[in-house]
Image 1 (tube, protein in one colour):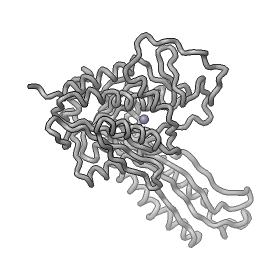
Image 2 (tube, protein in one colour; image 1 turned 60 degrees about the vertical axis):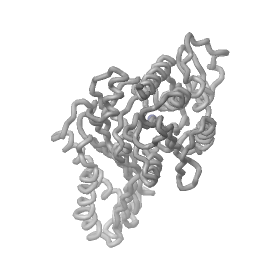
Image 3 (tube, helix red, strand yellow; image 1 turned 60 degrees about the horizontal axis):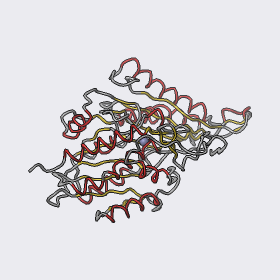
Image 4 (spheres, protein in one colour; image 1 turned 90 degrees about the vertical axis):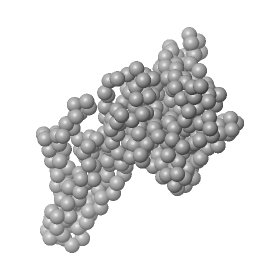
Length: 404
Ligand SMILES: [Zn+2]
């Protein structure tokens, strides 16, 4: 929500503007809330890369309203295989209902911070990567550098798999990936997997005085919700545990529910959404199998004994695999060397890193800004963090230079 009463008349001049400020401002000025098209941003980046002689590969969603962009700066010998991906998502979360002190899509510098939706999560990193282009182009690279900018990360990492499938089909195999999600420029080596589902329980409506003639969808939804809670309790009580995470075990919960239409009617429908977040090493499919076995072996037969109409529909809303980076992977060692950060940090939020990793591209998370600022009103990235990312990418490009 824009409230110009609260907006200062002019921004104070920054002591030292990071080189990536211009690009980041430009990227934030596109409203790429996940429900909107991101093509304006993608085409601007594509045209800029084309101006430098770099061709982009766009992979679109089904409606062609959104696209991923993948582009490669070849190595000194013209090679395009292997190399490191600089990865970021172009979409941002909505600002609906949030009270902002300035227009979220008119980025503004105040007190050494750049404010705007996506400054932190995560257009600051993309801006920094694009700012590094001239240096990348003028360096004799020992291996290629790739840009991978996706759509629809914020609604469940939906865009990146389209790009990864396209790269696989084209036989493009990068050897590592840096995902620039906000980590305050520290190295994150692992995150949990996210698995989200919608479940619809179908029963039979009847007058509430005639319950034996109906099939109560809410009551059977409650049984299944309780079963999911039991799984969560089991993980909490018995592990496995990884104490590098804030919540050191796999979690599960039901998040929304709706059902029924009148007090005196047996409810025919109940719909709920649930998710579980698995530690790396816990197989998300095994959790789903337990839930399906309970539905098929217990819940559904009980429902059908009451009424033949009984049905349970389970559909996946989103799935993003966990990330568990190898310390031996070259990209992990490179980013550790460039940041001089040797701590082992694991985080609760999901990223596309797990998808790159699953596609055979070792991945690591490191980017500017603090995750605390992500998704909030008055989201910002500090100019200091932007400058630190610029320096990091400068060292990154230097490290890829051919040494004669
Ligand atoms: Zn993000």
